[in-house]
Amino acid sequence: MKKERIFSVRSEQVEELRQRLGQRHLLESDWDLLDGLLLFLFRVLRSAEEMRLSLRRLQKLLFGKKTEKSPRGPEDPPPGDDEGPSPGSPTGAGPGPPASDSSSRREQNHSEPSRPRGHGRMSASDYLAAETIPCSHPNFEAQPACPRCGKGTLYRLRDPAVEIRILGSPVLTAKEYQLERLRCSSCGAVLTAPLPPDAPREKYDARAKVLVALLKYGYGMPFFRLGQLQGHLGVPLPPATQWQLVEEVANTVFPVYRALKQMASQAKVLYADDSPIRILSLMAENQGEPGPERRGMRTTALIADLGEHSIYLYESGRKHAGDHLGDLLERRPPDLAPPIQMTDALASNTRHGFPVHVTHCLLHGRRLFFEIQDFFPEICGRVIDDIAKIYHFEDLAQKQGLNPDQRLAFHQQHCGPVLEGLKSWLEQQWDQKQMEPNSSLGKATRYLLGHWEPLTGFLRIPGAPLDNNVSEQSLKLPILNRKNSYFFKTQNGADVGSVLMSLIKTAIQANVNPVEYLVTLLEQARQVRKEPHLWLPWNYSQQTAAA
Image (cartoon, rainbow, N blue to C red; front, side, top):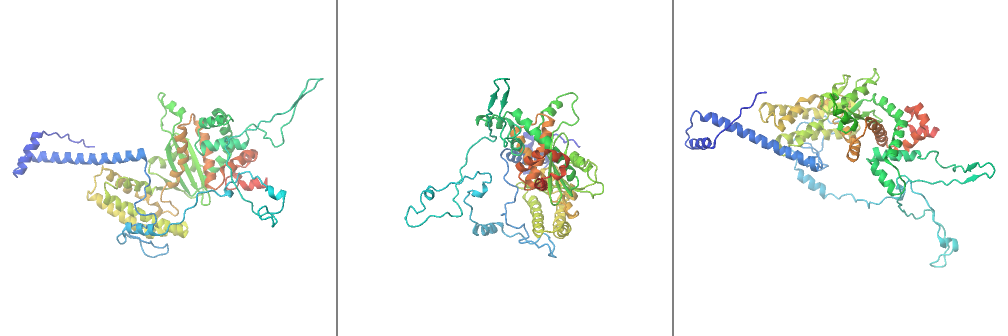
């Protein structure tokens, strides 16, 4: 890169230059001085602009951001398309007429009567695990006559009144069995009474083990915190014991996790994204000499879209999302067509070398403009509004239930002209030097234009998604654990967490109760080891019924 020239000037020189400018008489040496001053002013303005952007990013980092939605109302169509075409409409989707006043639309929406809100109470039927205790009326047993009028005869109503009472108890409760012992007066043998038939065979039953695993890896409850709570409630549960329980659960369900991986390799669409993580044993390795080649640590979320089902897999360690995608694609049957890969634009995501249809997240490109729209409203506004049109058309396609080929034709017809117009306009702004290449606006534009093909893959590939939101949202689960527990101690602990988070998340997304599912896997551990593919979240109930 060309080294920038250092410019210095004394205040006397500037004052003399101002006087000559007032007299409209410049010397030959003044032109170099003016050139340096203008260049210096440009650099100062650019630095101030970047500083304001950095402060804005720091503010969002510290206090968070509420939303990335545009200020239009939630029901407003994108600019230039008040209602939008139906999927069968032959009309194109160009920039359209000027947008109507969004404030008037918001006022109209607010004037409409809002739906009445609920009272916030839970129905008695929502308490599925509540113990039912029938309560008889004392008057009915004592006398059949009405105590108020004395004339009528009392009879039972079909539906009883219901009152709910919530009782506090430890997460894990305990039962103490006091077994009677008998000693023989002759031989001294001691006979101990057997446990009742309904007593668990082990000290910790399957549900207790699953609850500890679910609290830790499904809801972010650290072992030490749960141990303190249990101790205060009179049922001690040390962190070391909790770890033994969750490791046992992970070992039991691991065959199902492996079956999910094999099935995920056959998916039509694969999503992937990374999030940082801390593993103490790997951090200790980083301190050694010469140390590992890769020093970073991350959790990768892999989502396999199989059409009818979705599989959520988590992996933690030094590998990137691209490495885990490669491991998954290595299992893929060779006779299947290449899948669609949706990731961000990192080069490491495509280093696996397997044939895939590469697509990138459109919202990543939009986000760069959204963050700086207050500083460059004209260009950023155009980009944000045009991308809003794309999502408006996607919403219409989903409401119509279009198949992948119909959705592709619909987007080509309606979104193609919008994106082609946006690309041509951005290239024109770039060629006319309407933006500084090294500024935040220039970087955002360069990213959008430089990755245009994978960002707009839904215009060429049937079934290609628009964004990577599904994997970014799935990372909330490992991030919850990271915020509460901070780190994993060893790589083995990270692997146990990955297995359990994968099964918990997949079960929840399949509308399956994760507690009942994991308890069933533990109770049927022998059958699960033999045929794990029959014990997936969406088919395990059939095996339970058959057993």
